[in-house]
Length: 148
Image (cartoon, rainbow, N blue to C red; front, side):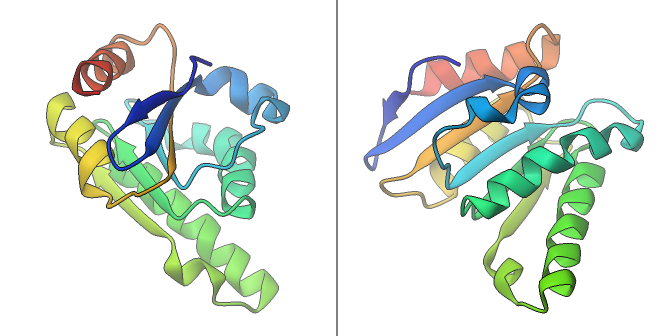
């Protein structure tokens, strides 16, 4: 993880290598309000590996999932299914106030601007879970850092 980077509206931004976090959820000692996850791979079967991360984020009170990448709509649908499953299992409507968006045709600049500025975060922790070494995620991280 990089250090937390201050951004406007008293927000903080942190980056995590998604692969590390999926393998070791204990590194998540903070509770983000808004997260970004990317999906560049057509194979949706790999979403099962991020389910524990999504559940931990939901349990910690995360209220906004921004899905980026060419196949982000399927990741968005998967997260919505996890939210629905949790609501059905707990006979609760807690998931109703969780937002999910996908950005499959947006440029990295558009996604970064949306994540940082259009999610209406104030006094929030934003976390980007990106795949370290993946060129698309490296570019997205670079754009995010240039905007803050």
